[in-house]
Length: 182
Image 1 (cartoon, rainbow, N blue to C red):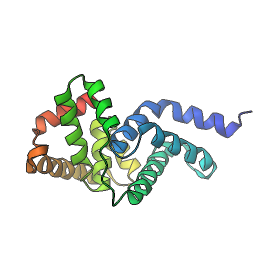
Image 2 (cartoon, rainbow, N blue to C red; image 1 turned 45 degrees about the horizontal axis):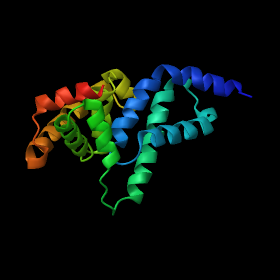
Image 3 (cartoon, rainbow, N blue to C red; image 1 turned 60 degrees about the vertical axis):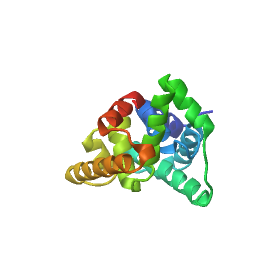
Image 4 (cartoon, helix red, strand yellow; image 1 turned 90 degrees about the vertical axis):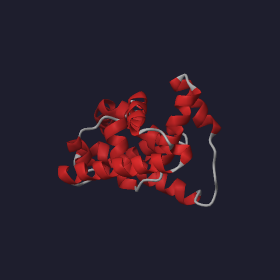
């Protein structure tokens, strides 16, 4: 039997589901399965839904939970190197081209080298399509700080992609890759 809170949660979650899954997919790449991150986040959100005072802030609440889940996974894996063949296979299937999949793989690796807030802002803006205003609300900052964070994150990403020979994909190509991921 479903409760009122459960129905309210589903009504609030449904409009943001697709974008939230895209966020989780980008954030979890090479670290854990997207489905696992989404499910664990949904479970924890539903467990703590009654503590959420402003129901309109469900998405920022869920993103913070997803970030905490990822942080815990990374803390546990800190000293293990992992190559995720399954994740790479998914990229190849999605793009239909092994070269494009490899570029996306390097893009994700470079994203994982960014500071957490910068990575989150880039993923939210470029991959999941959130507006600067929405990102500012999610990250509890103002719009100017969010614009600055995005600009600095893009510059850092650009330097990371140009720095290492294995990451050398052009920033314009990175933009095309972001479009593929949307």
